[in-house]
Image (cartoon, rainbow, N blue to C red; front, side, top):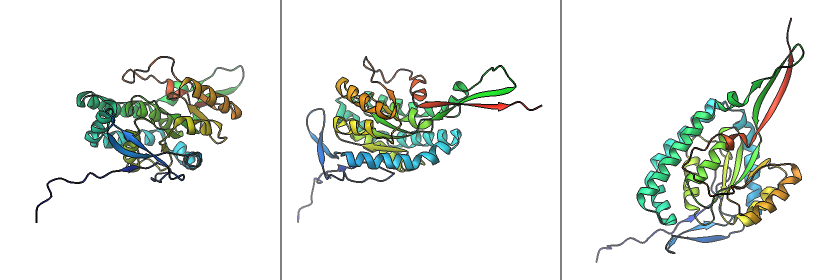
Length: 291
């Protein structure tokens, strides 16, 4: 009896990430993910509008607990995600190399930058409130104090380029400030997004804080933009025509909208705090000064 010298490859079907679990699309659909050279890599679930509704429901359910957690605790959890992402560095490098057509060195730099980006946002968790809050001078015997609060459930159309660093750069500022999110991953390069979901599922992040859908942004994003229980939408990865459609739908319940960038984004650049402030509300309270 001859020995087998080659193993059969295990063809993986990547699933969605909703509420901390990995369901298949309720539609039963999937699509083929190929490398930059056109070689088969895997099958990915093609999310439907029903999946989008389920993800919004999961994000809404997780919002009270996540927004009510201390800023320090949210920072700890983001740091833990960074630790676990670095622990799977080799897998992310392999996926980015296959999908992006870049060398292993450049892919490694992207993964390292993603880890650093998470650590950077983790450090902001208990500082952004102090930067944005204020004690306002008023003509009267009152304290007038402004503080920031999370918007709620945020839909995110992830960038098509930078399938890991770009993805981390749009998710981290949303959740570090207490929001929960539903993310439409890069359709062309979804594998790093689902691998990131596996990292999130085994970290300390509560289920439902981040929900990741794979498939067509043109199909899913308008339903999220029009969903009445979504409070904001980040259109970074949406094309011009899709962005206009989503903005019109988002106006129905006055969602906060972060428009897609005019120029190509350099994800390695200093991100600043704009993405954190985009989905924060300012609450101002009056309190009488005691005598």
